[in-house]
Figure (cartoon, rainbow, N blue to C red):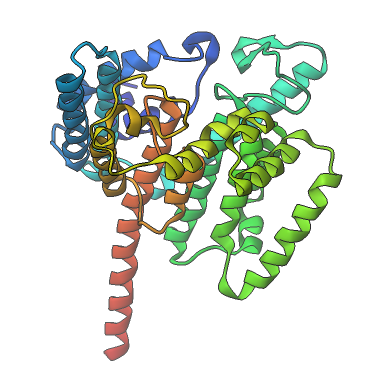
Length: 400
């Protein structure tokens, strides 16, 4: 096997996505991953070799970054610039992946389905191994990402992510992608019986990980995924079932599930301080949404240009807004909606709001989620084109 056979466009795209979707803590650490930084630093070289086109992803991504840097440097010249360099690395990495998918057409829908399955299975197997070793009193085995954290319990592990909530967000989006890819292949959404009949092992692996990794965010993700199957004729039954589950949950002694309900209750009341007490991890996302809409003052001219990096005022407004301003944030949203989301009213946007706190900063798993979204957008375009042509051909044949 030659290097050309290894460093194919397809393999580079697959490696980029999977590498950003997992974090081996022993090698990469808990914050900035040096291996990921090194890889992202060589993506400009890979772009020149594999796909040297200045695509929409590059135009909108670096427009957002360029305007952000200009405003910030003009108003706060003493601000540290390392954050901007780090963002530039993520943009280069995303540019490479986007070009390989949209320009080079490096990934087929069947191959992307295989990637989705491998990642879901990998998370499930890692969790299972962590649980087995922990059961026998071993809590530190770096090769399976078991790092001896104090929060470990029989049903609370980080699997292949930094923490359980990260794993929950990644798996929610990956399974959503799995459903959408099957829909694109079939020309219509798949039913639950059909899904179970043809893909039961993927479903078991996914549900096992989501239910038993000990993350309240996982139950939020499952609730959001259930919306995919929501049909108008089933609305009444779904509401009844949802209310019944809501009433039964307090009788189930499972801490992550109880935390998810408690977060839901405090979110309805808009009590951000109470939410921090109930679930600090979930509050970091939900409070951002609540406080952003509660305290956002568009008449404040300073808010349009930002208050500078690391600005703190005690409120949980989206940092991308308070630090860099609404102008920067709107450009970032244009970038995301144009390159990643299939539509304004889509589950991707709901995931972005409720799971990612309406922002993706300099964190690898967030960009992995964006790459999954952008790949789905690509296959949706391809699918629409295919089924439209197929219907046209069948119409023509019927006329003949």
